[in-house]
Length: 150
Image (cartoon, rainbow, N blue to C red; front, side, top):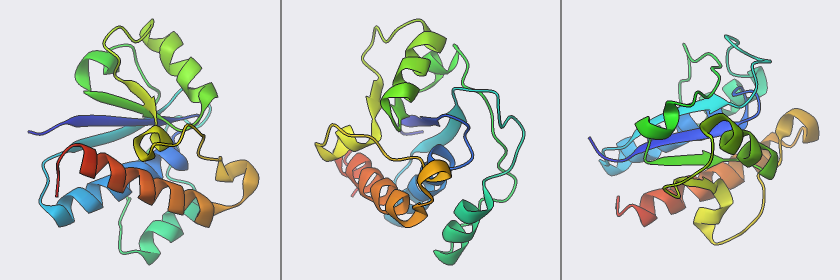
């Protein structure tokens, strides 16, 4: 098994779930062995499915996310994953709190992989699902490129 990646956002129904399925799809198309999951820093959406506008967007691109339900990040995720990738600074603070720090330097923001220190805006609030889609796709391509998954 290749690298193990955990995407993290607040509720795990929009950004991190989108990134999980986009990266899985890209990795499959490239023949790359990467294990991907997603989680949230809060328990607010625990057990809920992917948010309908995100589900529709994934479906429009031939990506099926059926069966995915929100889960909360756990301290043990730090040991289980090679990279823990947050969507914004608030997520990063939550990730650090949950894991008790980042001694191995495994945590980053998604757009760091593109060489940009910025956040992926939460479409739950902005309603800009296409902008989120573009950021997630750029970030996922950058991750695969950085990991040598051509």
